Length: 363
Image (tube, rainbow, N blue to C red):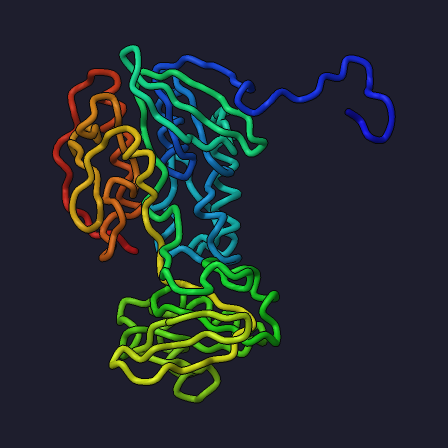
């Protein structure tokens, strides 16, 4: 009912959520519209295959969640997709905003149809294929039937958590926002790898009072070479504070308690904002729903690397999700492009790609 007056002609009240179901039928469903998902869509469209493309957020959602102005470690040619080159204004490595604009241009250039903001919440084997149940950002349920599924949701789709009291408080975040937010705020950053170090530097330069907590006795040597000298200098000079060999114990509205790993007394640090930059992990929910077997501490999916097909016939994986949740990273966007021709060959019954060759990524 329109509370501001009579209902307009033809108005119908919305149906309950469970009734709002739209059905489609397709040969292949791509789940995930990051760079590899988009590159897959281009390949399938050029091959004339019937496919449906679904994405829980916006295209490039994981990259959208990167800090503003973050620069890729990989050079532009290594992260370019679908044969479309990347040109940056200063011929240097791509920034977050440049890469998002690049992804939009690829989607428009190839006129790709991507159903964004539709999260898959269930996968059910049926009728020689699979039933996918999606839910839109408006709460509508949509059902799709597909013969084959390609899951390309990435290996860093959700933040790691600590499981400590106060972790879900409103001033605690797993993503660096625009550094202007932290001007003259006391911010505690937990972590000591690239994301944490870059966040500390950028917040410091934006006028924040920065304290770090890291479980190691020093930052790892593989921190980006343009970040490590500066963070060490600022800590040595006392302009950024760092409690090495500590772990968070609890977060309150005003402080974060840090516990020395040697078992000493907790340190209580004032905090207006807390950034938990402790890494990200693969969301394996869809793999589990599909019946894909996961192995090892990294919960990496069982698959044939020649075709990228999992132990479940008809279910393929593309991109960094193929390595599960990585501890020591070896699978990146730049060395996942080969997944596209392997999957395409499997879908079209072409001869499979040769076994993978070991390549050294720039990242």
